[in-house]
Image (cartoon, rainbow, N blue to C red):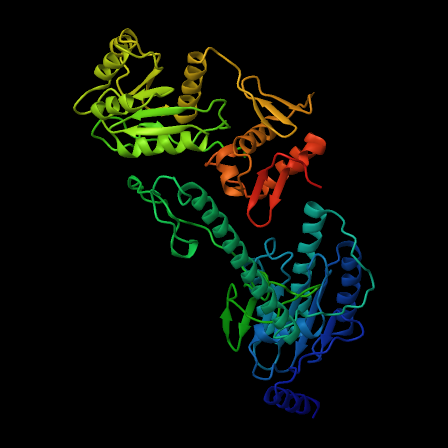
Length: 561
């Protein structure tokens, strides 16, 4: 009658979606003989052995006998028992063992906790069942079969913890074996997880947008301001692809080595349980899904500074300007002279690049596309220096230099791809003051040109003044009201740029290009920080540096409160 009632209750539970009816843990905990097939001596033997085992290792060997599993698979029923009992074995070690069998259905299942499943695989469990259990079980000698199998498992625990792990003190002897299953389909956890995912996606979008804005500002400072060369590529945001110049295709890769390995998921019974369900054997155990065990449950069964290479341009009179000069370089600052320069160069883009760079540093440039036009420019007015390419149509640079030296001592600097010793000596023999070969650095070209102009002017020191501020660029000196003020290099170049453009409003982008260089990748706030430091160093004269709201800065003659 009791068995019929239990079966009815189990069926009702399954129909209503409630908890499945499985064997309940008795007061002694270690053995539940609902089928009444074990002797009292065997039950006490199992209890005594388990108490000693738990005290020394934290492990437990639980034996459950029932009449029927009420249509459930043996592995599923064992899983339900472990779940309803709230875990077997030590919580931190997860080293429990469970044996379940039904005397009326020919169903047997034995499984180990995930903490010992590697040391106690399903094959070993199946060997013990074949050797010491199935024979007595099939013959109805359940008591002797259970005791023999129990001794096999107990002997393994003694061997394992005695030789491998030593004595293990359980985390909480005599504790309450509470079971705390992981939440499944919990509404709060689901909502929190979705919100977290949404916030993560939002953060990624914000970071991408910020990075793209920074890229666009850099692109604008390099190519979109007045007087700059045309951009070599079209700007596109991240979502449409990263802007880049065409690159040669990469060499083909060799075949990849085969990928191996895999993973073993956590939670549930990954395999390793052994037993049989209804007459047939299930050796090695297959995958058994089930609840995830936390605690003593069966979580698894036995189963920098900017050092980027600058862009360069290509030599040759008919080639592109890709390797003719280095466009971006370091150490740019305000020039120490104000002068008019003539640039004679047959490559249009290179002429434009040199003009824009020199103009950004305070020099005025006139351009000539060949030797004849250069001579016409020289007849129209006087220049402080001439930059001559050698390989030009109509009249080459050597001929222009020879004609100029017949009546003028203007400094001449050859700028050419002809770098042989013979060509260099010929240039100096014709009266050139300096000789620069391509590719070249724009910063070096500017410094050489300024040096030629200063020498041609007799080395006289230039003095710039605005209100109480006086600068001598030749010796990089700054005085305020007759008092010498020491300024760091960046602050000095910034003040020099403001003095040369006194009374004019300079945008932050302009100051970045003139002082930091057009290859600077920092933000506009770098200007604000340097301006603040410069004002502090100048003292009361720092008030001459006026902030123009939402535009930039300018230097005025008088101080303002």
